Amino acid sequence: MERTLTLIACLSAFGMQAQLTHQPVPPHPEYKHAGPAAWVEGVAGMAKGASYFTEDFDNGLNGWTVNTIAGSVDWEVTSTGPGPTSSTYPVPSLNSSTPTSWLMVDDDFYGTPGVATDTWLVSPVIDLSGAPPNLKVEFEQYFQEWEEDHCYVGVSTDGGVTWDEVEINEGVGRDGRPNPEVIDVNISAWVANDPANVQLRFRYTSIWDYGWQIDNVTIKDLPANDMALIRTWRTGFDFDNTGLANIDYDIYPAEQVREMQLKGLMRNKGYDPQTGVTLTFDVQGPNGAEFNSASSPAALAPTDELEELVNGFTPSGDIGTYTLTYGIDQDQTDDIPANNTVVRNIEVSTNLWAQDDGTCTSTQQQGPDNATDAYELGNYFDLVNAGSQLVAIQVAVHESSAVGSLIYGIVYDINTDFVEVTDDHELL
Image (cartoon, rainbow, N blue to C red):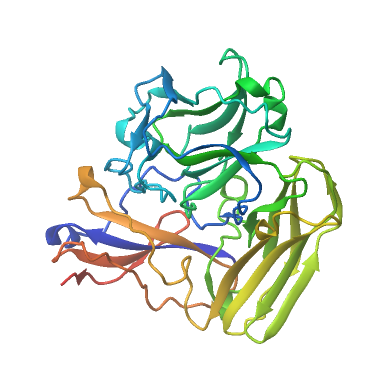
């Protein structure tokens, strides 16, 4: 029988609150794309080829202009990052490679519920008449997705009368976002309209979402042959379409291993067609090789994407680490091989089950507007094999937590009906 449980750790700000009969605390409304980090960004392409324009914003806007079409949230120069908010998922500052200053739309801090934002960041005119015809714009960013936020990169060659643009960051989610993340966009066809009069535009639209941070904008050579592994999945988890089935975990107890669905998204980021393209999968377990497979060869034109899925891998159950290597092969010699491989791990344990690897990399809290409220934070666990027994819940508590606060563990079923609760434990 398959059953899904929710394990929650609840932190109460005041001791009196936790003495009351435990009732389910309403979940924070931020849930879109939440849950296990089933999508992982591929390795960013290494720098290659000449640069024909660069801007690090260390001298402020430096000729760039801000045009806010709707709302009151603007692009702004910052050296500190977003302001503090009550969000359960606060936005970190961009870890720029040139951190003197960068550009930011701080939507979470300055935005207003229900109010739309449409703000543009536009470059001065860039003369690319001496550059080759195949070009890309590359930049560093930090972006975490919420509900109505959209990010566009565009080019104009007629003084901003018309724009060609492409949406980026769609569907990337909120959890586990790279910081910084290197993004590149093929702008060759747009620049060709008039290479001497090129302007770049970064356009952000939303209805009170998180925001967008960028830095180190460059225009450089587009390689001829560049297949890239954009995202990888370890399971078929797809909350929007299949709910909680196939949740992705970092650590599985041996008695709950199940078939994985290994998948990858490839993109032809070069300007030449690529042939014989295959996505390869290799799994090494604690005691040696466990799985090896590849997709059927395919041809991809420039900018084409292809998603490939391979079933058939179930961990043997041997205790230890399993290394999953995703790779791309093609007939052509790749100009940027660094973005052809992604390595991910899972662990099989005798008694641990977790959506993390045991290392704390971030924290979550109520936020300053709800600092005295009790709250619950937890994960879903999808049981595929009957008979497992829950004997303990492990949780990390940040050093800033108030002494005297009470913490307890609680279990709900998939309908959020109460199953069991632990004793209260005081933070000392």
